[in-house]
Image (cartoon, rainbow, N blue to C red):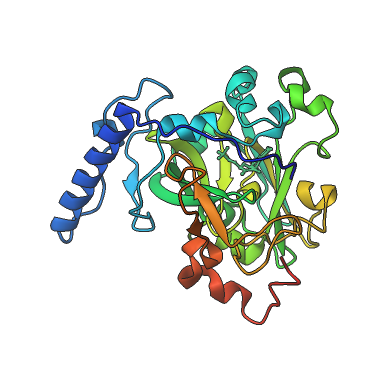
Length: 319
Ligand code: MTE
C-alpha cells in the first residue's frame, strides 16, 4: 500500500449519528429485555439521515461490537478507494461519478448454479446491522455500523463444487469515472480473495449499507465485502463478480508488493509490516497524534471466532 504519514482527522461529532446511535442502544436494550423476542427492529424507525436510501427491516446482530462507532462524516470522508486517487479525501471528492445502476454481480466459476444477481434482488435479502471494527494495514482503525448479509447466504444459492477452494472478488472498472486508474498504481481491476472457509464464516459480510442507508459511493456502493478480522484492504469495494476457483488467486496488493501484503492479511500485532509496526493503531476521530495509541488485538479482537481457521499454520509465513 502506498503509505504517507496518516493524515490527521478532526474529531467531528455529527448530531444525526449520535442520535442514531443513542436510538440504537435504546432499541437494543429494549430487545434484550424482551427475552424471546424476534430481535427484529425496523430500520425505518431510525431517524432519517438524508443521505442514502433508507434500508428497512435490518435486524440488529449479536456480532456487533459495543464500542463507540465513528461518525458518518469520519467513515465517509477518510477512505481508501485508489480508483479515485490515493489521497484519503479523493474518494469522497471523485467517487460521486461512479455509475451504480444498473448493477449486477455475476457469481460463477466452480459452482453448480452460476447466476447473475441484480442488485435490487440482493437488497431484498434479510439484512442485518453489524457494527464492526475495521483495522487498516496503515495502522488506523474505525468502528463502522454496516448493513448487509452473510456472504454464506449467497454462496449457498450457487452450490460450489468440490473444486471450489477460494473465492475471488472482482471490483468494478469504470475508467471514464475513475481518475485514479490512469496511473498504474495497481493492476486494475482491484481483485481480492478469501479461502473458502473464510468466505463461509458467519462474520464475513457483504455490506450494502452504512448507518441504516444504502452505501455511499466512496465506501464501495452498491455492494462491498467486509471481513472484520483482516486488514481493511481485503474488503473489496463495488463488487461485480464473485468467482469460485481451485487455485489461490493473485490479489491486487499481492501482485503489487508480495513482500509487504500477504494473501491472508489477518490483523496480527506480532507480525510487523516491513516498514512499520502493527502492534498499535490510532482510532480515527478519537485518538490524536499525541494521545497514546491503542494496542492492536490479534485478529482485530475476533480471535475467539476465527483463530480455529488457522490452527497449525505459521502466521509469520502466511501473513
Ligand atoms: N476496494 C477497491 N475497489 N479499491 C480500493 O482501493 N481499498 C481497500 C478496501 N477496498 C480499496 C478497496 C482498503 S486499503 C481499505 S482500508 C478499505 O477498502 C477501506 O474501506 P473504507 O474506505 O470504507 O473505510
